[in-house]
Image (cartoon, rainbow, N blue to C red; front, side, top):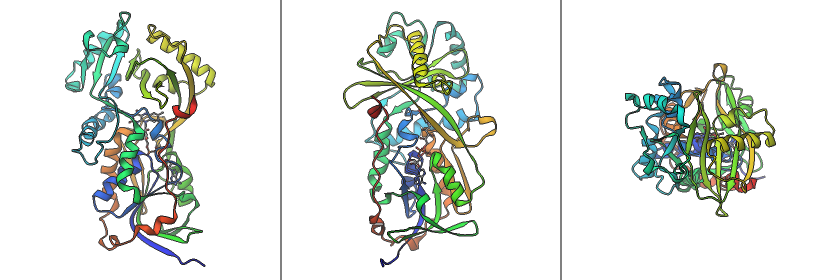
Length: 397
Ligand SMILES: Cc1cc2nc3c(=O)[nH]c(=O)nc-3n(C[C@H](O)[C@H](O)[C@H](O)COP(=O)(O)OP(=O)(O)OC[C@H]3O[C@@H](n4cnc5c(N)ncnc54)[C@H](O)[C@@H]3O)c2cc1C
């Protein structure tokens, strides 16, 4: 019989999406003896399928009112920019920036509404109208008649963010599904997590659940009744083409949400994918893949009639955003963290809000324990290592 290996830890983080990886980096920097367990691939839940926009909240302000969401998220682009420049809380200098700015555009008649709105003090320094000579190529066509605004928001290549967060902490990241572990509880406290065959017993002070949609089965296993989770389903569309027309923009219609949010992602074979979210994705839940593609084709033809997409390849897929439950499925306003026993349940609700999430999680984790500093992480070597997830456009065409 193999002997039991016991490892005392300050934190076990469950889930290696952006939330878990960011929190791991911040926790280790703060002196916590922390590890992360991921059941599949790093970023393979929502994170690598996100559009990578580091929002500053402008999109939420479209209703004409500055909501709580837009206030909280306002500071995020600068925090990420500091990290990308090597001067922030985490070193993201190796990350591939897809666009230094995200844009917002509207067709002719809505322009005046946006101009009035963006002229308000709340947007000073966050939104700037783009003159015709400075427009990105896709909006330089003579048929483009609308207004174009440059937002102080970045777009990042998310797999490269995942790698930048994982690389310095490889020795603390392992592949394991906590649903398969034996959990020892004392009241509402988790005392130990054991992985059967290898006789590995982990004794954490706290467990951080950044498991995205995977929270629900875990909540059952750990008997967590509150908080609850909600899903916001999306039907995303991808258009793969051979143009070199990078586009990063929300297209605004008459409503308070973008008609379409389009980001552009390079493919390994040299092609480019336009990735469509926004209203196209939110209203497409009942549409079949074929209907969704037909719908998206119509929208894009109406929005960008000068771009020939006759040779493009199209695909769509369903995915859920996982968030804390709100009344009437409204959008949560900020990152969310709540302590239950010695677990901390956390959802960033947006990739952009990962810094805010770590700010909320760490104070709930107590103080780093000096007694665990000498523990040997090589006891974990019996566990495999997770890969970084591939973008979905690499496998869909
Ligand atoms: C289509 C789409 C587009 C988006 N675009 C943007 C955007 O442009 N900008 C933005 O800011 N936000 C965006 N978001 C939101 C953003 O992607 C998410 O808020 C964020 O990625 C959530 O990160 P996470 O780490 O909490 O979850 P996830 O990335 O889902 O990670 C959770 C991880 O936990 C793991 N896990 C689950 N259960 C277990 C278990 N039992 N044991 C071990 N591991 C487990 C999963 O395998 C997964 O890897 C978008 C979301 C979607 C779906």
